[in-house]
Image (cartoon, rainbow, N blue to C red):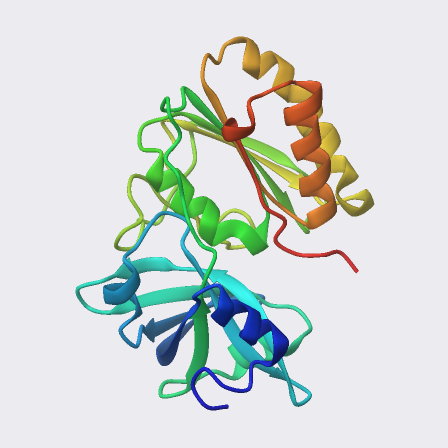
Length: 270
């Protein structure tokens, strides 16, 4: 596809909303686990043109049986001076994962920047309540770095069969550049969750009943946590149905102000 061409009606809409097109080049690849791959890329001038903010994401364009298909991915360790960043892929079936599996140095992919943004919570959070899963892991890592020293309770949905609560004693292998405090936790099937043992309470939850188990776990724990939290900030990034359910719980049942609840569905359950 030519730059800015061949992206179908979605590409046309993005151009109307002043989407900016770039071409990224693969510099190297890293298999973090069997089902999680990290690609290192040059940005094609993007970071100099757009700047960088926490949880920043871009839309990649893939070929899906001859038709354009876009998926959004969060930047990992963006370096504007070098013009580089990484992307992480939770691998499953589909054209995006197929491309990531086969990608090698020198390959290129087209991308559009439109819709990404981040507003610092004001007042600063006295505690962050974050609910995420492997699809939103890069964004979760970026968020934890952005909120600085604020303590966080994190519910992380996994594909495993047993959940655990990890607080204070998390071991790390040493975070990569730009990870902030703490290291990469490799206890969740090797996934690189960047946490600070001194301030993060990590609670892994197995995915059961299409996400209903995660919703139940959060609802059971949150009321007690909120009793001791003056200025909470809630960040939800799971499948769309789970995200919608939890967002309604925090905004309607618990009556948290809209600006204190950031919710975005990252994928749709089949």
